[in-house]
Image 1 (cartoon, rainbow, N blue to C red):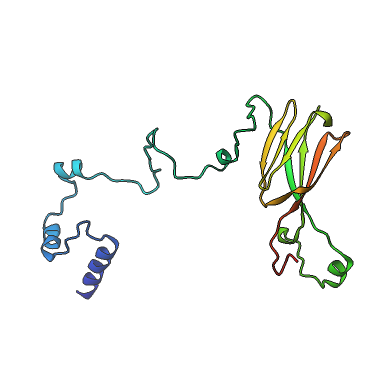
Image 2 (image 1 turned 90 degrees about the vertical axis):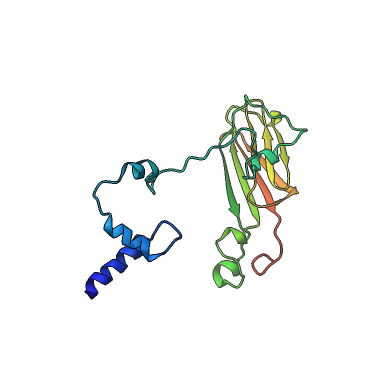
Length: 191
């Protein structure tokens, strides 16, 4: 008898009652009416859902999205947004200024992580372009490059000093390399 009671308790544990009503009379009625097929009324009222189905969300057209659109905030009114220009391939890398004491004696607090880097290097492939036709604008959080065939707005992962940058054009590889000094707060890593 105790085994049967334990099994009933396990059944209650894994199949909790769907109503908030926890009366014993409902449990007794369930044991009395044990048919293998559900009644006609219960077929219409019960709708089984699969827990692995995707949730369908209906969104109205006039409803605003709760997600902040970063790219729309970067567009400014004074800069044209040419839709017909291509976006070139670009890459961001970082550079540290290390000395012999950092490399051999490890006296400084610098690490190989980007938190210890001073410069951000942005490389942009601009095939078929000339340096005379390029327009480069450096803002605190973005880099904008315009040319006759290409246009790119690159959101920068770290704030930079707009005045402390350097740009070099490699004529053979047709690459623009922009070196930007990152604006970092002084902490125990950056000093």
